[in-house]
Length: 153
Image (cartoon, rainbow, N blue to C red; front, side, top):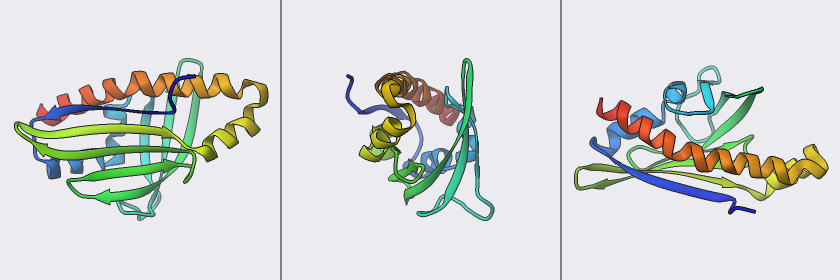
């Protein structure tokens, strides 16, 4: 089975603060994600630790929504959230480098996620986990390329 964590990076020609403002605006996620087509904050919520948002995901033959909770909101440094508050951790980390900002997107399937998938999918859990892992491995580079294009455009 592939590792249950993955990350990749790209240098974007903008400041860490400007790039953070872009990636922490979950309402724009549909502009760069190959799977998540739309996100919206709970009423009154924003990019602050503890805030919740919903994402609508689409792949051929399947559409679903997830609830996520912001766990890190450090402007210019990191924006991170947990799917269902405990299943999968996604994060954007930012670091100033020559020419702009190194943006790293990371993904980690957490132990609680493995337990939930075992309960939900039974004998098919491993195949479901591998499918989500492939999606992250393919999606992260595509997401980073799209964010770079948008931020530099």
